[in-house]
Image 1 (cartoon, rainbow, N blue to C red):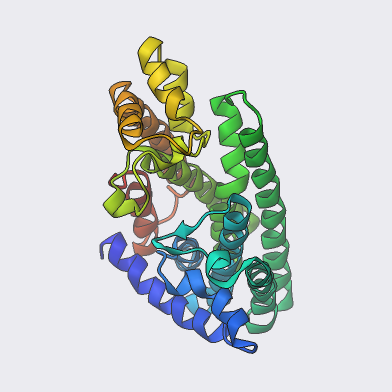
Image 2 (image 1 turned 90 degrees about the vertical axis):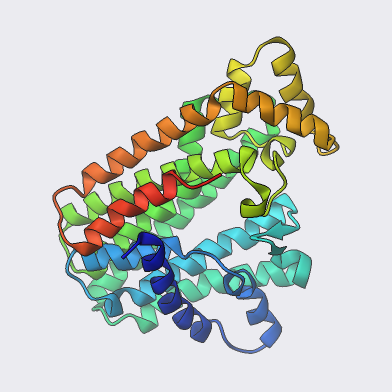
Length: 327
């Protein structure tokens, strides 16, 4: 089965569970909480929970509550992230706070966060020993996500361009940690030893770094028809992502001027943005970023090299799917 088909199949399984859980009164609150969820998403993180469990010989029915909890946490972060950034669109639809107003969006995020833990504790078929491990892992990941978000905010406030190392540290916490905990929770649901939890954690962490690096590349030079974002959106917003860090470091003279004219300038013209994007393309940044993403993908693959089976093959195929995504 192609990995894209496998992802879609698992997404249907997760969506059915999520729709049942995110239903209640007052209706508007649950409509807001499920707004981004019902409008798409590949469900990559719950996919990792389910496939990690399956790869280690566990049953998907034992992992569905954990998988759904991870997706709730992911959407909780999206809702609150959009409020902080005052974004108007996500995945081609109006953001939660723009559609339902800020107070309700904050409450929707809080419901998603709380429901995640409630789902693990009340819906899991596992013994209390395993559910305690799941809650501990997920709560620690949430702390790191908040820490990563602050690093990102500090990046935006500071005029200094961060180093590649500083950027990697930020995305490890803000993005990769949820991939990491997804795989770890899958291993716990399979009732496996700490060695397996550690191996799967390493897979998820490196996959998550590769995912975010590729995502940031798409945010600059991606096809707007695919990304549903304007071309050069991230550079106009002044986002200090790896492709932009590398481009600014490499650019000289007029090339640097063209980039900095657009960087963080919300009023930049379409022509100025296109010029900046063309400069970034000409500097060979895409290949450099792809090579770095591939390095993390190779680390991820190495961490699960001792396992076998169809689920392992799908996990390995996911690396290529994520890091070689079309722009």
